[in-house]
Image 1 (cartoon, rainbow, N blue to C red):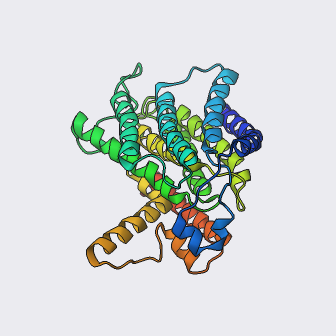
Image 2 (cartoon, rainbow, N blue to C red):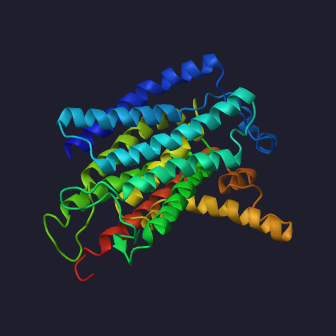
Length: 355
């Protein structure tokens, strides 16, 4: 528990102090956000955001990595394969997002990497993660993941290495893009992903206390490094809270694709390594809902020529209906909290008497 507290505290302090430095640096270099033309034309509030420093996700990633390393130095405990793999996934996707952000800034437009190049980068990083996560067993023969689907734990038969790799890539690309779509209003993505990270701190702790090595039973968990996965979640959560101090409405800096892709990656990585892949759909329910709004909008327009929402993603629909930005953000945060609470409730329900 000590290393979780240290990781969260170090991540918070580094991000809280590092973000204003990044704001000044990016402002001097002109690393400002470009706004979608249709959004800027439709909502006056977004016009004022043009030029706000972006790529703040670099602070989140660096602070989280340093916090993770600092917690292990402080406790003299070596890092684990599971923790390092999830951090690799976060950093790799963050690098793809950084390229996307840099191209937007360099070419002064709201679109960065071409969709094919962006997807390729995500797939390459995800394929390396998928290849490594089913290897490196510990002394008990437990690998960071198995070639099976999971909900509260692994379920059903193996789907094979090819099927598992495809499934992992779907999860990684899906959730990294889901967080990316959620990022669009000040503080929205930060708060939404923060609730999921908090849930994974609790899940990692519970899996540690009920692991199958110490007490074999019907509800125990075959998870390789549950405590270190909770440390990873705490490191990122601390860094995210420190960043949110400056990203809350009115935001002085945006996380950009650097942050949104990295956060989506760490959520997917934690779900895979804690054997809670399908549970993530509930825990990150707000991101899923927002992604579905885009799918519905595009599908409806292609099939019928009509739009279901005034604009997608969903948060912009409510903007165009006249809701204040802070109202949307706070209400969406509440939805995110409810989704995470529901997911945690399902996770713990099998331990309730009579369940």
